[in-house]
Image (cartoon, rainbow, N blue to C red; front, top):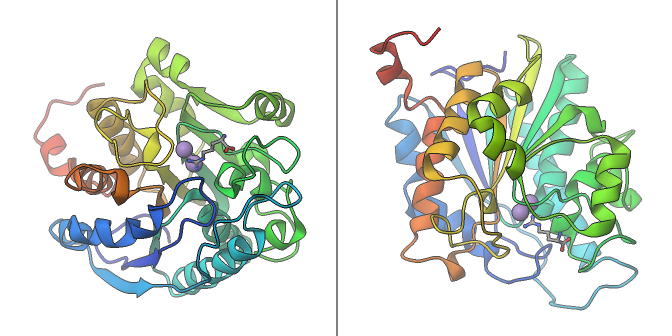
Length: 315
Ligand SMILES: NC(=[NH2+])NCCC[C@H](N)C(=O)O
Ligand SMILES: [Mn+2]
Ligand SMILES: [Mn+2]
């Protein structure tokens, strides 16, 4: 069972670090989401929510890259902690929400989700909502920042300590991933994305085809045996509405496009785990990006369902 029901307990797990990022501040993300009322917002829809508090890990040493990676040891330590915490929740039948922290932490969460899915015989689909493809490697990266590499590491292209976080092999095959909202990809990274055949719905695609068609494509083929993991990098959103992130890229989804994206995911009933990452309160304005993230996460958990039931069927 992984569909969200009112009885599936949700577990919030904070990972207050920015070791994988190029700007400091995402370490304050978990607390900003709590201050924005994430737990009561979900509870207001009848969901039961346990806040597990924050994980701990090494401080950010703020060093230059070594061998193509910045802060590799610290990133490994944080991701081990995330992996173990997320895996423990899934094993108990809970729906974990990782409160980042920067996006390198998706290596820990998704490797745990993949391990869980292997153990229970479920298929896994990952929706990567982001301005960036995060598919760099040590040789392709322009920055050495590991938050630009999690998808590559999860697919087996990275250092062993990260590729094998969740056990025997890489957590994902590229064909399990759907990337949505992409609008900033580095030149070498772009070639590698094509080479590996990642399914990317970039902003050009969303502009031309609309969010509804985009999500229909990205969600196609899900069935009762599929665990859906959503990795929500807050820089997915247009910076006009979501300024509180370290790596803003103009031209992202509007408020309504983002809502529709979340609502269509909710409609599948297959959501099994979630990351909320890259929120940077140091760059935010009166916590508005955190408040917006909470609003969108409510939609992801079916906030609008009640209203829809009173509406005319669209097809
Ligand atoms: N999760 C993120 N915000 N990633 C931003 C990555 C930016 C750039 N592509 C890099 O590799 O450095
Ligand atoms: Mn991003
Ligand atoms: Mn990202």
